[in-house]
Image 1: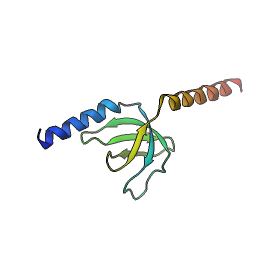
Image 2: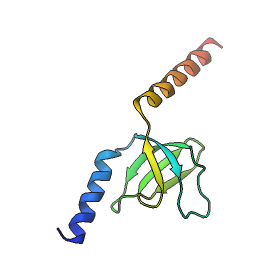
Image 3: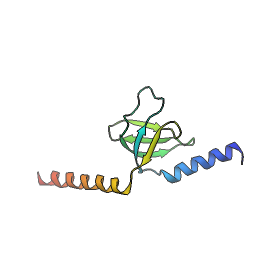
Image 4: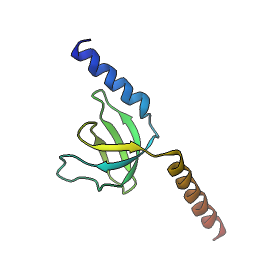
Length: 97
């Protein structure tokens, strides 16, 4: 397999594993002059043709996550359920007012 084919497969794997809407947790940002704080959660908006994950973070920032440079992971099913419970309870509280 040549380099271009390997890169194409990597990008496709990133697109398959991190479709738009995937929730992630940033563990560490590499060499960025204005890094996003470790532990920040975000939502994948898309993956570009070089494999960068473009995300909207919960702190309001938008930034690309570079695999191999930045460290991140998908939120677990448990973490997603906790987020949903919190959102549901906030919605309920808003309706009660």
